[in-house]
Image (tube, rainbow, N blue to C red; front, side, top):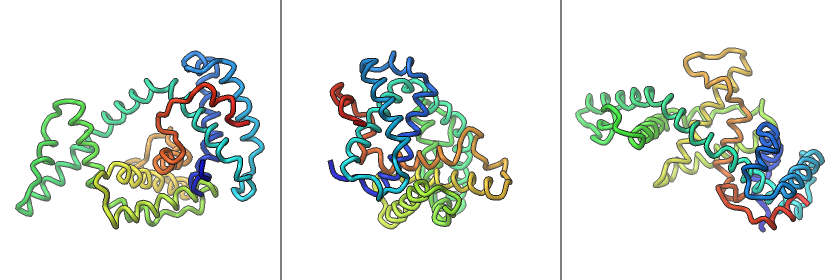
Length: 262
């Protein structure tokens, strides 16, 4: 396995303790009960990962390059364990998020349609989204379209993010995200999904950082109270590095657990 990129290394060092904390929150027994791996495999992996994570230095240069394949494999298996337990919760959360955002999304789309009408032009696909919903697919499409309409407005905000108050790993991830977004805006991709979501997360991070620095929260734009700076940065990191690290839905053979984190 090739050495992960610098940003992916920063993300892995944040991800491992986060995954262990999530397993603790879910409960090791529940993880074992829902997993395709054996109780002995999961318990051994969990406690080995906990020990190694506690001993890992914070400086990337101080970590032996030969250790990275094992760290990435460990993160991949832990992520798979968490995903097996939380799959139903994630689907429900996505549905709730769409329902909460949909009214504002439709309002934003209507505003864009009115603006286009005022200029003597209209996108009929957008206009169709302002009608009463006809199903989940239309609802999700409307939400995505509203995010796209805000892309340019939020892009400049993300470029001006101050990372001074972030930890070193967090700041490195955000800086890579800004560089990625800048490249994508200069050479637009066919699929804007990841770009739109990164810009949206950058805007959420801006609000959270402002609230922390100034102790003032704008009730009209504040994210829900359960969303933290750490959550947002990890979401950004997942978008940037999940594919590189093999974290996106891969199944893990049982024998892999015998080598990971050792």
